[in-house]
Image (cartoon, rainbow, N blue to C red; front, top):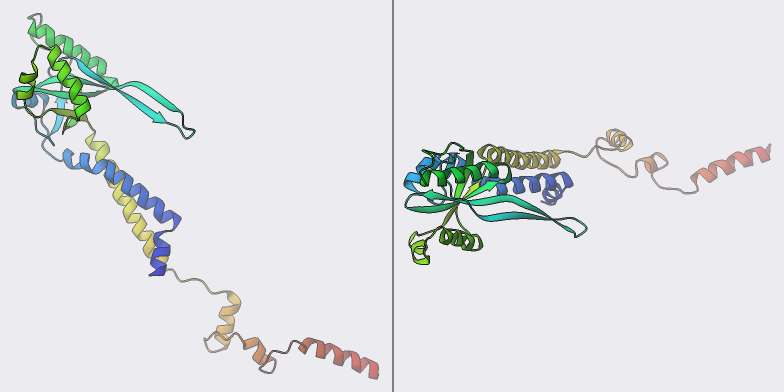
Length: 256
C-alpha cells in the first residue's frame, strides 16, 4: 500500500492527474451537448429553445446588443489587465419570445450587420437578411446580472415588465466548439490512462541490486550474508587483523 501511494504522489503522476481532471472538468459538459441533434437558428426562431439544446447554424435575425463582456486577467505580480469587448450579447427571436446570444469578438461586426438588416426587414426596406454568420452554442439559463441587462434591452424595444415576465424562463445561447470540447475530453482521458500506466509500471519495477551484493549473494547460496567477508577471515571481525600481519612482517625483518 505504501508503494502504491508513493507511486500515486510522484511528480509525473500528479501532473498527469491534474491535467486530466482540468481538461475533463472544463470540456465534458460541452462534449455531452455536442452529441445532441443540433437545432438551427431557424428552428430557434420557429420553435423556441430549452436548456441544454445544441445550436448550430446561420444567425437569421437579431435585434442588437444588450450587454458587453470584458475579460479581466490577473498576473502573478498582482496587477490586472482588462480586455474590452471580448464578447457581446444580442437579443434574438425565439419562438413566442426572445433569447440572448453570446457572440465572440471576431463575429460581432457580422451580427451587428445582421441586426441592421433585421430592422430593415421590419421597416419594409429589405426582403430578408443577407449577412448570416455561423455560430455554434449551447442553451443555458441566463444568470441574474446578465438577465437584468436583457430585460432593459427588451424594455428599450417597447415591452413592459409584465410582458417580459410572461415570456417565461430567460435563456442564453453560449458559444462553444464541439470539436474543441471533444479533443479536450479525449486528452483528459488519455492523461488519466497515462497516470494509471505510470503507477502500474512503478509498482511492478524491482529495484536493481548493487553488483557486489549480487555477487556475494550468489557465493553464499543466494542469500545475503553481511558477515561473508568476515567468515573468510576466520568467521569474526578482527580490527587488528591487518595490523597483526604488518607486525609479523616487521618482526621477521627484525629477527633477521
